[in-house]
Image (tube, rainbow, N blue to C red; front, side, top):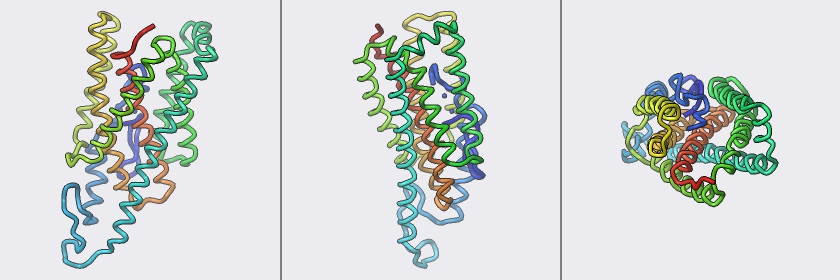
Length: 299
């Protein structure tokens, strides 16, 4: 789920982090309006083309008894798998960029020096730039070149690496590594669940959006009025549950959006890969940060 608008039937959609909900409201502007994507695009495409739905047996002769081109069907399914793999590949590269930048930033110490010199204003500048970049990417991706979208995504990942460099100060390095491995395994299981389940998860988009808003408000109130260890642990647990749901949702969304655009040109497929990568990237980062708050050994 991303900032701004993202591809639907015409080409649009919406994303963020606990500290990095990234736009302060990751799923605003109808980003997680699941019915928008499913009803306006994906379902119509399947009504026009009698491809077997989820959980339905494959009938090589269609409904009218006439044989269909099974080779063409296989080619489309293969292209869809390649497109999904591309999205996960882009997400993985984005995470690697974030990790490398975070390590280099912490090693140099310049971000902490910059934050101290600017009195904290510099941190807000970085946050605002990240939010603006993600919103712009989500809203305008279908109007820009795929190469431009890819560059913006990796710039965003690099900026996230700068701000995430502070976790090396707050948490033990071993704890960070273990939490990262746990998060990676958890994320893999959740995305596979989203891609393989026969349940239509698109209808839960509004529930997830409302849940995120409630989480943000609750976390702000707790930090201001009752920042106890118990309350912070409770918020972190709720954050993990919420972003687990978002990860499952985005896993299914990624599969369905590529099915909807199965006949699109390569440039459009690349754009959709980037926006899906951004959605999955933000799910992973948010879940990692909340898990780190739960299991992290603070210095």
